[in-house]
Length: 371
Image (tube, rainbow, N blue to C red; front, side, top):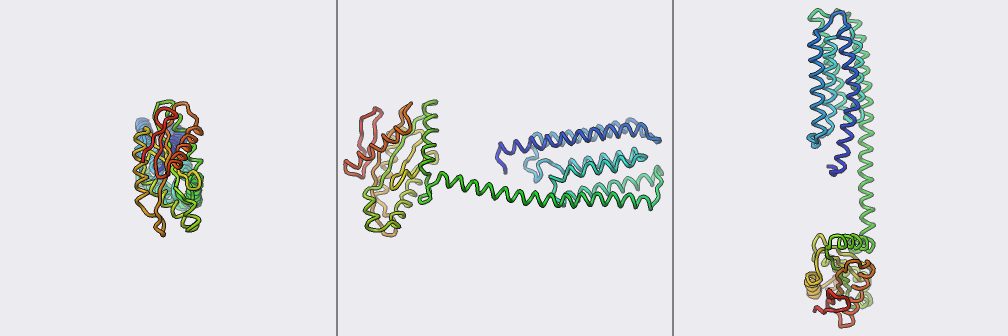
């Protein structure tokens, strides 16, 4: 199903289309009333007014059903076939009351058909056309049975043939438009999938499947704005593989890539959905913890450090340790300053012997060592 915003726009478009079509129906209604008054065999005014009110009452009910969103789960949320069938039934009633002006009814049927060209499938379109033909034929036979209309079979066959040909032409047109619409819909779906794929590639690191540096920086800016506006804390952690160059030198870059991908999986599974894991570059990763303070994030990061130390990575079953530098955002701090502060803490962890988590306290310049 479309999203809420898209569905709301589609709903507005459907209502607008129905209202525009109703303007033509209003004109036809006025012609119907005028014809009934001018016809030699005048219909009872009460019956004419009641018929018009009945039609517009049904039209208003259908329009309300669409505008209220009650039809959004239907195959055609715009309920186009029902609108068309209801209009055809009203035109047939017009034909019955104003049979002297049958041309008005025939033109009315033809006015209804274009309404479904861009919405119905060709089968639905043909179904409405056959309903119109059956309605016209039924009223014609009823009028003859009641003795209100005398007609020549040859003439009626000629008129009926022209009417049927017109309906058939509209059905063929509806089929072609339906095929074009289906092709356009499929192509549009393919383009949306391709666009989604491109957008995903633009923010994803190909090797690890984590977010890339560009997406991380965007995410930091959003969290800074949220923290500055609402005071919501967040923590940034640099995670670096210890002695990763030795792994590449001794086992090759393919094994090194396996290690990076497997460590990325550990990081992804170790954080919440609201947090973010990104590959910053090389063997460096960044974790962003949303809504956590330094102490809470430190516990998670030390658990990750221990988990990494206890696992073996790649097909070579290599042991691994990581060093971590952790910094909490200070209101008003620039994103680059936060990253540099976390990066300096990471190198402090390296200097102190690796395989440890170094974090800032709430006061700038004060370091805490978590091992």
